[in-house]
Image 1 (cartoon, rainbow, N blue to C red):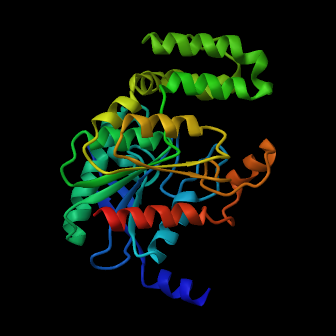
Image 2: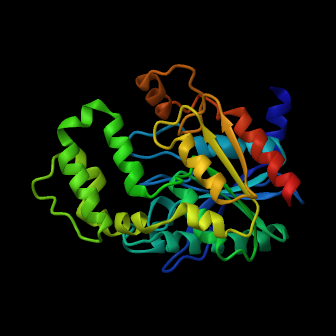
Length: 308
């Protein structure tokens, strides 16, 4: 424990900014020292902050804990708030008026700032969940990037994954017909009338987020994985309730030169869950005292050190 405390102490967390469209993007840099690989952690869906928390009930701090654990392994990280949210609120007037391409542009802005600060020739992008789509999009313009890490990343179209998630929870049965019809409509590029939509579905299909959801549904993760010219690491937990090993295997199959690791018991917030009980799994989403899966940290650290 003392060795860990010392390692974290020499890797201070400091605020950083990068240029945004209308104002700065804000993040936290954990510096593991001169010459250390540099990884940008790209957050998942919704109002997820730089630590991986979300006002909708996620307080597990997976990105903060991952950054701290990576520092112990000699890897620097940058984790940032999305444009228009939290510390990056001034970057755009409307956080919902975004696309995956916008987020990919922000990732490149961070890469430029970090290369200037650290002297690194290139930096890594680690996309978690929806962030994996951002990493894949950014990798289509590989300049300044060492490679990409896809953690719990979708390997199918978003609409297909959303249908699977909704059907997997028996409590959603009364809402399924309306939800599935909304997905069909958005996939076709047609807005959905939410005037008579039950409150639980409004989180998914609120009018203000529908343009972004339509853009999300256009993304082709396996196509972009196949086109990637950079090293690709795919990491997927077997206890993930939101993204499955099917997705990881699809990405791996699409990119023949990728490396894939399936981590037994890791769930979507990168924590270990031994039980198959959904409630026990969901409870970890609010528990920042649980560390991230140590195998995840080891796999990422080994990959970025070996592949640079």
